[in-house]
Amino acid sequence: MIVIQNVDVTPRARIERLWVKRVQWVALLVLMVLIYGSHAPLISLTKVDGQVPFSPSSCVIMIEIAKLVISLATLFLNGDAAAVRVPPSLALVFPYAVPALLYALNNNLVVLMQAHMDPSSYQILSNLKIACTALLYSFCLGKRLRPTQCAALGLLMIAGFSHTYVSLDLDDTGLEESSGLHITARGLFLILVYCFVSALAAVYTEWMLKSQKLPLSLQNLYLYVFGVAINGISSAFSVQSEKGFLDGFSGLAWLIIAGQAANGLLMSVVLKHGSGITRLFVISCSMLVNVVLSWAFLGLQLTPFFLIPVCMIGLAAYLYSI
Image (cartoon, rainbow, N blue to C red; front, side, top):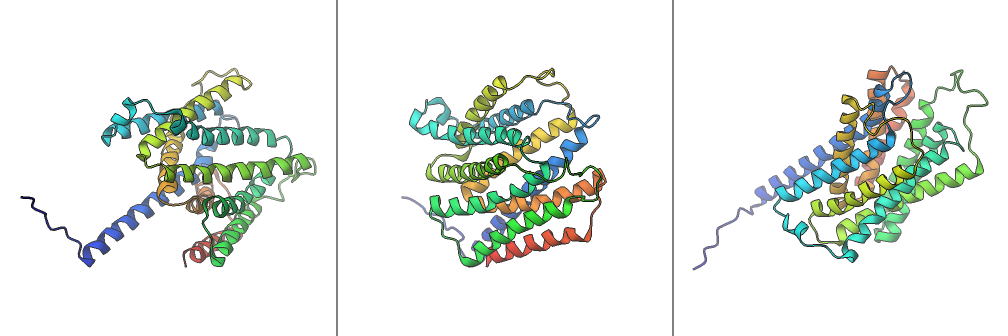
């Protein structure tokens, strides 16, 4: 005789579970915003005589290794270790190489673009990836955006433009004609490619994570195996510096690695259970955290114009949610 236990499915219980999920989701997004926003200030704090003391490529590889190790540990803790013992088919695993290749391409594009534009132009124009993500999200995933949602994303992009512009110190003597805002035709082409590849990587990763009915920890394991391999190969073929692999790694450097590893894993959760559009709002909100932390620890001077992008991002979030 089978005894079926009564399960509490009262409306009150459903509402309580819904609120718990909402609180967990909000906490996850807030944590991501804080980690994203603290990344640049932390890197600035590691500088010695104006230079980052460690190899950026070594830092990227260590972040990928950390994500790989955490994914493997999570797989065992969740009781899904049996999936690792059975060799997966190439057709199952190979698609996970695509995001790693796309992100590696973008990392190299960022370096290449420095010769064709100033950093401020890069920051301003990189906001075009919001529009690219929205277009690919609709076209590739078949997610039709409402007019209010399109307006919200447009406002989010304008907020990114205005945030970067009001952050520029146009009275700084360093911004002379020779070092001011500039971009070449090749630089404009490269930034457009960069924005498209960034959007494609996010949309493709979301499609892949949702289309395969596998544990997220196993999917992350496949992702970061390729991440370690491709970044390792890219680092081996890049121009070698005199620094050793772990030279210059301080406590702050390891904190950066831990934060970026955690953020990468949390982003997988967002793409698996949320959407790439949520990712855009996380990145936009992190700009505000970046400015506040830079003001608190690096002496950045805030102006009243800082409130413009704050209000724009808040309005964009409201418009997208209605």
